[in-house]
Length: 261
Image (cartoon, rainbow, N blue to C red):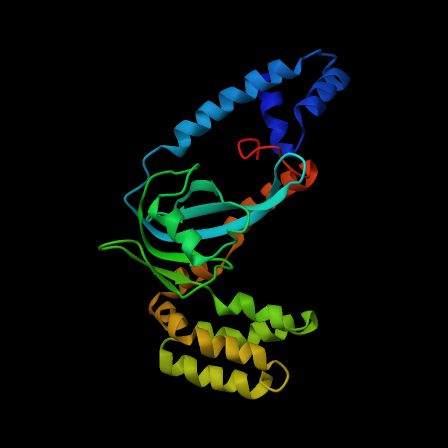
């Protein structure tokens, strides 16, 4: 029964709804205090997980955030930030969850605090990452993590390109951009981008400017092998986690406290 109780908050049910569900489905009368006691054990385990030591090196760290309404009465949107690390052996590890304050957004300064391990709660220690892959972060593509630490924040212009285009052109845009980001060298990538610009600049000048402004950050990406480029460009790993979180958030609507979220 405890396993059932623990699984229900993850689906967005409140303690009162859990009590009603157990009574209806299992015929069990369980008080809200009992539910609180059971879920409290999970929080204890979560605290241990948050304070665990991280691995020494992560080849890539994916960072992203979703907005969650938190607060009694007038709830405010706050970013819940997630970091997913890929080890040098290719294994994936959720490094931690961080709750930002209202107005923090997903700016570079906030992520700098997270990457330094100075953001609580959810702090899971520090680790060196060869390249941090940022979704929708603001600021320049590089942030310094203190003496001897520097992270390359890679924001792929490929995905952002589709924001400026009609959905009916997405498939063709993806096809025409593939020779650019799969090029063997910067010179080849420039040639392929010139061809892309000649075809699409008149219709989507914003996409061309996006790539031109991001080119200096894009060039180091070409040094990776094709297999590594695929890992960096693919957001399926972190997006699948966020999709499950969003389902729970939508079912709940808002959370009274940060701990509840």
